[in-house]
Image 1 (cartoon, helix red, strand yellow):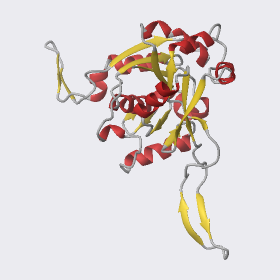
Image 2: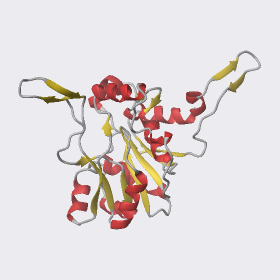
Image 3: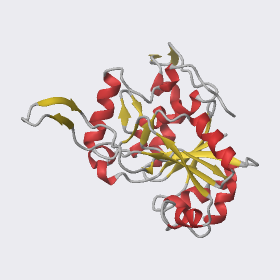
Length: 268
């Protein structure tokens, strides 16, 4: 299945990083968060990507146009006999990436509508945002979607905690401290959608409409929206604190979203 990733927003809440690059290019470790998201989908066998570009989309284009330069060690011989030698390679040889300009000011509804032609004859496709990671079982979400037969499946997640959670005794002694635990109350839209192409009938004249507003509301009213519950790790990168949190997990080798280091569970 093709994977549509929304990469066009301005990321104003993370202005420290996004003033100079689009949010999907903000790094976790030495790779953009977009790469982490794509690696997760590739782990489940989905390597045909459609990136909806907008704000500073040329930076994303440059990254993939010069992928070897960005990911490999290289030796340059300067002078009249210029030559280039790449000393290593990458594991993404079977990726296919469509870079689609969906407009700098277009809302998410319009971005999705504008890439319809790149889906070919596919009846279903995957979709997510370019600024959040998780250990979502994509194959399980696809099975859930096909079992229910609705137009759209959204991955429902518990919102990440914004503050440290303490276990307290009556005398005030702290028995445990958990940094930013996953909240247990309520469910929110975590992205990682599975969609039927019938969703495009809800996206007419949507350039100025957020997908998460009127289209999703109408899908819900029509009984065409179902939720796949994910109780594992999920974390967006909306703030500088969350940027530091995700980078801290990666630096410690404790990144739950690094599913590509585990055996795959593929579903076409």
